[in-house]
Structures are given as structure tokens and as C-alpha cells.
Length: 260
Image (cartoon, rainbow, N blue to C red; front, side, top):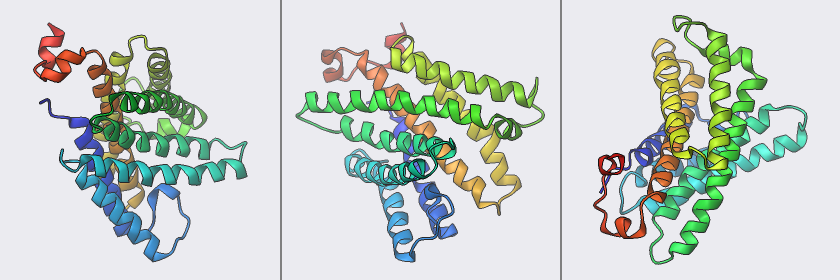
């Protein structure tokens, strides 16, 4: 059985969210709004429980369901902000981010459904299309706030900050086109996963080390980890879809065999 690293990275992202929620005493996915303490603790417990449960095969279905519901509720909050500020892109971008993380849980939940392959396939297909749309929002988010995006790029990476801001914005757009069109979708999702992991390694992890008391860096690191995990989960879904039902049942097809 191939180790599903995407699911584990996704779970670690959820656990990180739970820890930061507890330390910050604020629901990080909802911005800076104040909420009752009991609600914050409920969300913290849900994020930690879901993140831990999804790491193990026996409990991953429950963990995926918890995380899908939690992050879907967060995305609903940003819909309310879109209604209030329809001409500002900030809430659109946050909706796309939270909804895409919720979809990671949906994919894992659907993959754990046994005895109802048609229903699972329908859920995965709907989640897949929704994810492609979310990747469009990633690109637009960076485009609308290109200067801020450029400021996040380490200055030592050549040829320059604005170059990489523009390049990654275009990469998100191309990945969305590939995912939605189905042309080179598996390659695009793999490259998307690598890019998001690169954001974590080059931007958010160093930011947490250099400025450990800036909780916003830890929030962004958790979000990026969950998004990278989701992208990897989508990659696993596309890979599985290339395997015939017989091969899937036998469970003896390795990634190396598919490449050869």
C-alpha cells in the first residue's frame, strides 16, 4: 500500500492550525474577529482531533469529515464578507483558500467510502472541479496583491522578487487551466504541490524561525501546509484515476511500475 503523504501533510497542517488557535486564542481562518472563548476551544479541539485522526487509516474517514466540515464553515464566513464587500478581492481569496482546504478533507473522505464506488466517484469529481476553481482564486489573489506577494520572496533568490511573484502567479493560472481541462492535469498538480511546498520551505518556515513571536507567520505556515497537503491529495486522486479498477483491486501497482 503506497504511503499517502498528502493526507499526512494535510493532517499536520490541521494540527498546526489547532495549536495556533489555542496559543493565539483566536480562530485564525476567520481573520481578526473576536469570538466567545468556548467557540475557540471547540474549533481548536476539532482541528486537533481531525488532524490527528486523518493520519491513521482506521480513523481517517472521521478525521476527514471533521476537517471538511470545519473548513467549509470557515469558507461560509468569507461568503458573508464577499456580500458585504463585493468589490474587494480579499474575501474572495480567503474563501478560495479555506474552501480548497475543506476539499482536501472531502477527497480523503470520498476515498475512504467502501461499498459505494459510484457515490464516491461523484463526490471526488465535484471536489476536483471545485478545486480547479479554487486554484484560479490562488492566481487572482497574487495578481491583485502582486506587490505584497513580491515582498514575501526572499531577496537572495535571483533574478528578483517581482519576477518570482509574477512567475508563481502565472504558474497558478496554468495549473488551474490544466486541472480543469484535464490536459496534463497530473503533471500540473505535481508541480503545484512542489511549488506550495517550496513556499513553506523558502518563505514561511524561515519567517517562523526569524520572527517566532509573529503569530501571523505561524498561521500562514499552517495554511500553506494544509494547502500543500490538499494539492498532494489531488495528485494522488489523479494518479489513482490512471490505474485500472483491476489494478486498484490488486493493489500491487507501484509508482515506479507506472513510470516504466
